[in-house]
Amino acid sequence: MDRLDLSVNAGEIFGLLGPNGAGKSTTAGMLTTRVIPTSGQALVAGIDVVAHPALAKQMIGLVPQSNTLDRSLTVWENLYFHGLFFGMKAKEARRTAHELLVEFRLDDRAEAQVAALSGGMAQRLMAARAIMHSPSVLFLDEPTTGLDPQSRIALWEILRERAGNGPTIFLSTHNMEEADEHCDRIAIMDHGRMLALDTPQGLKSSIGADSIVSVSSTGDVAGLAPLLKDKVEGAVRAEVVGNSVQLHTRGVAGVIPQVVAVVESMGASVTDLSVTEPTLETVFINLTGKELRD
Image (cartoon, rainbow, N blue to C red; front, side, top):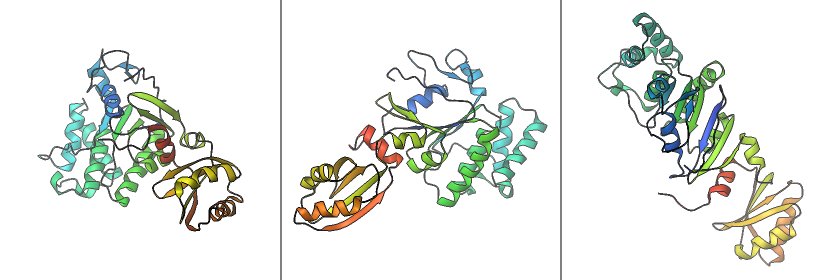
């Protein structure tokens, strides 16, 4: 980490985005006591995770990317014994396990073996287990990777309901649409440094354009990009992306006829044209670049 300074407000859903190797896992690892920081301070629910790791773990719930359920136990037992491990009384653990199975739509699978669960069911069970002991902060590491749309929607419906009166949610993900839809604030980091921190709308507004025109033509796209930047009213920037040009503009009124006119002035014709709003992915690429990461 490079002088990373980050605060997450109680009760919010906070997203941490970054390419592979950006430092997301290291950051989450430090906050969940799995990685010991070499300098600085990390607090979770006001507890120093280095000085008091055991106490910090009581305040943390974690939904990892990989399946860590105990395959020797039933669905209900995975919750019940997790509760006992965190100091819950047997009666309270039984009651809470039943309530969570109902809430996470797994009550009909209570006696099933974990190996018999679908990917979506297993992910919901891990989320239920993570909040079994009522943590103050719930860490989600790519919680919906590999899930079908129905399972993804179901999981987030439950988590959104919990977020209002339950734990603070710290989400690490590569899913831009998911972060945009569910997060109250988002931080984008790379190479251990914070590049941007704002609401999803604030991040999208930061690129200085409210529409993106993608145009392909029969002419030279490399030569088309600077012409569009100079000739189209409200143009902020233009760049070549594959075989097309992406033109960022302020406002969309009258843009399309101007783009077509510029293309035709080159003696070419438009082969494809679309207009979209800036997305979180646009911001992400602008900040972290287009190069592939291992």
